[in-house]
Image 1 (cartoon, rainbow, N blue to C red):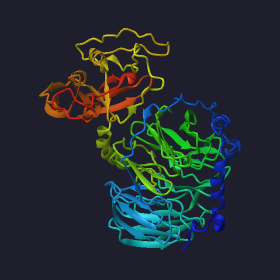
Image 2: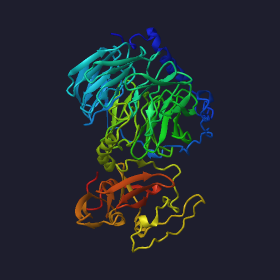
Image 3: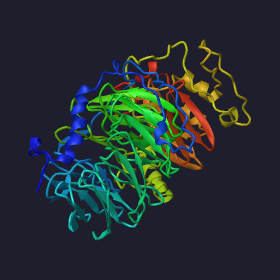
Image 4: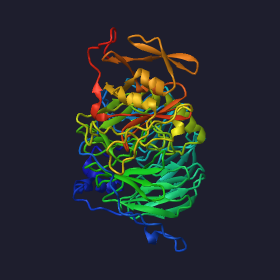
Length: 606
């Protein structure tokens, strides 16, 4: 059995291009040295009869902060499990990966091993987890393994070369796998060969399957191939260099991928070039498509690019180190992406820095986020790390590598998206705000000018019998809108707005409940009852200066309530209830921690 890591000086020729890309990382320019690049279409790639794609103006880097705006989340546990592949998550939360012991491992959500199975060699591809819980894993022994949920071998098929690319799972249970030998294989749900296709060059790009069954993959021959469901060439598109990047597919069926020619490409389902985005160095990372329609990808130039699906720049974020891993979008629009220096970056939906988690260990695999709201990442050496109580993934066409945490590589159907939304709903409500502001906060507002968000329509915030009461206009710049606060919101601001503790944001109980149109009863040292739709529901409370406070996560968890955090034009949380938006301004400069020794009798510290 062959292990390409055993003898680095004698790797096969098919790996030379990949090694070249890795070695070139040493030549990456610093952000200050990298030249500003422009989005440009490639006229020679566009058919003569087609109108050339519209060129995009020079990149506009999102307003940055000198330091992250929030403290990074705490790593809840780290286990040296010698992980070498990507980590996939099963529907019940189990984790599956391949270790440096050349075994396929399945653990529970806490990293405790359930079983392992000996493969013939190492493997870097993400294992694919079927809806039934079966595992399909690829190895460098040229073989594809299918295991049942208990780790028993269902079938094993030997192909024509090492399998670097993550296989893709079709909705009928059949599997598409591509090899370094340059062949695409379609295998039935029981491991029988359905067809093969000669790609003409090694394949390291993981296949992606569109809603109509079309299979897309990149090759070391600088091509993106589109194959019909029965394995015939539908069309091919030639990029300017090697394609390591795995394609992403948006809701309209458009395809996005990167190339070592320093470009991000967008093609329509017919294979016609829509636009390209020039970057400073290779785009070997795989893009994602966010729930709001942004194509997000990192480059070896040390930047993360967010481009609208029409080719216009949304924002560019500088990491300061090459990015080889795919990003992931959380359900509040936050984009999380690691870089090769070992730093995980959390970027807001508008391109601003939220926090950075520095590990000091190289990361070339993307983060994996479970539906329960646990973020997993692998560091150099095989350490598996978990950050619990974060937001789950956003629900969208391709918000993480290979579309879903189970790495199926297929455009999710409407039913799958609905199932994902339901599975992630509880975690989203439980961790409304998991960010602790730094002290002091970069670019924090001054206490005399408390910032507030752009108001929603007055009819959505003010009860019919209560007219809107404008607050005194703050001395703001002309670009800052003059706020219109309801009486309830004024009461919250007057009460001190918010407190912070343990990564949670707390609001005064009476004012926040009143703003939502809820009545409070039976307040105890630890709990209070809210009347919600005719039912009394308990919520946890804390005390500050003898005033009970309620966590925002508890308010967000109320039936019929949806919450979202916004940072611009000013930090705020908006709760939507009964089709009305109630916005709570958060004055970051004045987020005072709850006292460790409670002043309200009987209240215990968290």
